[in-house]
Image (cartoon, rainbow, N blue to C red; front, side, top):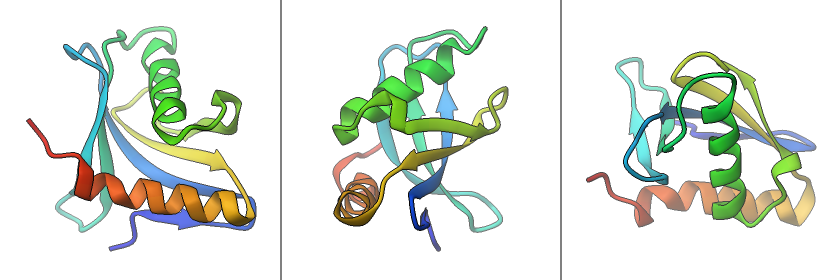
Length: 110
């Protein structure tokens, strides 16, 4: 199962976002019935006018130590399952892929 896709200048991943949560956090990698992997995340923001998406971008930027401007929700802005693109190349990209893959080992669901 491929969870993070690396291209020349970016990495993409699927994120299942739960808005209106009691806390912000990246939880763990999960697999859906079709065998596709997605990262689960929670944000306290409400899902209106892009607030939850902005909170997701801020959360990922903080967790990965990168600027928010490098992260975009490129698909699924109005749904829970989103495709996120992170601009990165070279050694930064390799570090990001390693950090994203490590969420499965570091974070456990409540």
